[in-house]
Structure formats: C-alpha cells, structure tokens
Image (cartoon, rainbow, N blue to C red; front, side, top):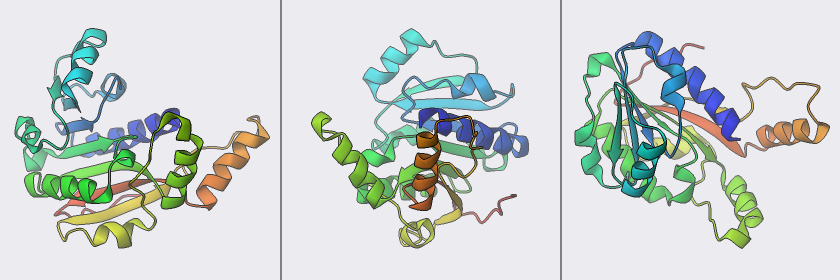
Length: 216
C-alpha cells in the first residue's frame, strides 16, 4: 500500500505545485520518505516533520537538500507551526501518509483544527481507513500490539462536524485511481476491488477556511 500511497501523493503534489509553484509543502510524520526528490520543481519549500529521534536518523541517511528542511517535533507540539514559512498567496499543502491511523479521532481533529487556524487557506491530503478497515488490520496485527484507532466512513459527514474552518474538497477510495493490470495475480486484483467496494481505505483532501474547487 505504501507504493500506491506514494504514487497518489506524487501525482497530487505535482498537480498542486503547478498552481502554486512556490508553495510550502509539509510532510507530517515523514520518516524516511523521499517524495521531495521525485516532485521538486526547483522553487517549492519542503518540510519533513517527525519526532526528534526520527529526524536525527533521517538526517544521517538522507541529508537535507536545498529548500528541504527537517523539523524535529511531535505533530502534537503545535509550536512546530511557527517553523513553517507560509504566505497565503503562494499556497501551502500538508501531506500525511499512514500517520493518523494510530491516534484517536479527538486528537487528530484538534490537530487539524489548529492547522486550519494557523494556516488559513492551506490544504491537506491524507489517507485513512474506515472503522471496519481499522478492525480488520488491528486483528491481523494483534501479535505486534499495533492498534489502528482513527477511522473515517463518510468524510463529508464526519469531518464536517469538526469545525466550520474545515472543508472536504474531495475524497476517493484507495485503489480507484490505480489501473488494475490483468497480469497481476487474481487474488491481488480481487483484494483491491473488495477494498474499494467496502470503502475500507481512502484518501481525503481538505482545505482550511477555503472553498477552492477541485479540478477533476
């Protein structure tokens, strides 16, 4: 799924920075992600945000490039927001892959509302599971002790209750934008179709105090 997520995010960011070529892009919970090196247009500012120990290791393995900055903070230490260069007219985009799953909805909603307040006009895309998807994966991973907590069923209804500072611009199921190659294993293709049919996983695109229309 990480390969699928990378492809979706790459395409999404490229589309965004065509509109906002000098945007700031913030990768929440970046880990060892290398998206910047694939999509850089030569003028964006990129921020990799993660816990101090994760950033320390990241910088050993992937030294920051020009216009690519590391921020060693917990996403719930809101002071990280003051480290981000932001001009509304230049645009700002946040991406979050495989991160929000692990936290309670209340904690995620408080974070996003705080971001919406601080970065008026910004946008966020993240992936998430439904409640059923969380239960299925938690059961499969029960021996590891990993628990998936935050699930989204209908993004418009669920996130719309959080705050009037947040608008859901678009959402789509996990594999809906992926070509199902008939050469792939039958089991793989059926898993992808079933995941979308049951709405187990999705990508959600939201804006902060902004109703920019999405171009399909």
